[in-house]
View 1: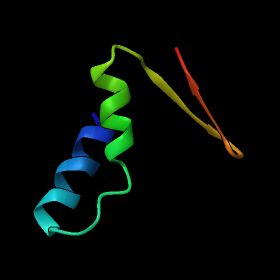
View 2: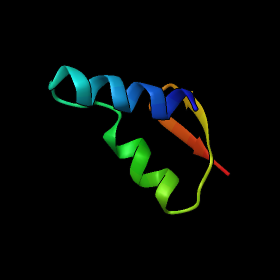
View 3: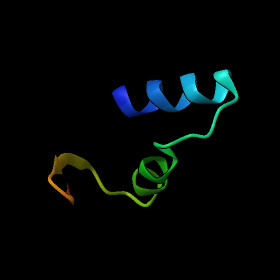
View 4: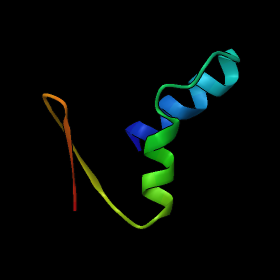
Length: 43
């Protein structure tokens, strides 16, 4: 839900959306666990 909220807020602000890649990951059926350095872990 947090990722969805961030995505919507950036869309409403009409700014470049830095979390748009996370929405693509969710649509593919993966669940992001979070970042660790430069690595983003998925389930």
